[in-house]
Length: 412
Image (cartoon, rainbow, N blue to C red; front, side, top):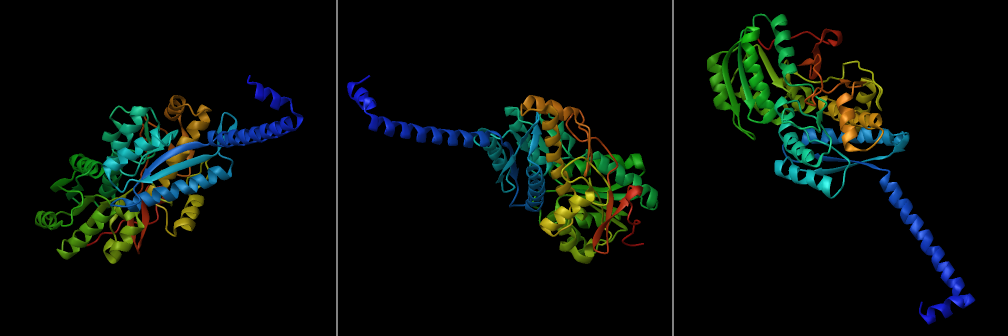
């Protein structure tokens, strides 16, 4: 040890100063350690969201649902992890409805932000891209996507709160065959995108089984602004039923152009437009009597062991926060986080492998309904609601136990 230092340490006055500095250093170190400890006690969930661009309406609904769940779980002290409550942080970025940006931001969330788990953006196409990134890093990801080709890629870490799209087809055909036996010929139009295309294909493939004749089938490109050629062809085919898949803006435009070109049929089904307030507001009287199939409706009286507890509590929370009635996007997004929470609690750890295993074993009832994941990560099939816009709002036609109205035809 240098001599000067020895002399300094032997001086009582200097020793007092040194001890004071050491004490301050230790206090600072303790504060820093405490700060680090607080950070270490936070569960981080990454969420790329479409807050602008073509899927912004859906992305903002996801965001609202996430915030409502987050407020409640943190108010309760956080998620119980092996007997210890841990607060939750959700880290979001706007991927602007851009597939490449969604992929890049997912990697950033995992590598730079070091999230523990992920949620996927709305829509099967973007879910597929994001899930591929999460799979490479072994991060469990909870999605709001119903297309089976997204879930059959061999991903071990992808789970979804929606039931398979095929359930929407079976529910619709079964109901219409019973309630409108005069409907025989169907025209099917779908957006050339993962979920809408699959649903249109399933609908066309299922027609013969239920005794329907497909008189027109076509796809329209993403961002299409003119449907006149398809509508003209449909008009010539003279169907009883027009069935269109896509997202809200597509369906509003298609319905307006049907009216402009005077295409009138007894029955119009659009999936999933009528589930959304934006659809009804965008169309006004033209939305009347348009039917749809959906994954959830607030009329379904479920009760569960979660931060909302009942459908009514969730309805009230969304209504207060957003000023609008909740639809299946709100509900399935909140349910996705509830499923992740329950899996973490079941695993008793943040270990991704163990949480993934807990997700495969999950079997719970929530405000949204039952959640039990199949081998491919999709939520198990259940009775899915059929709705129709009546007097400016969607009412439930099926299943019978929650029916609010009877099927109405557009023309005789």
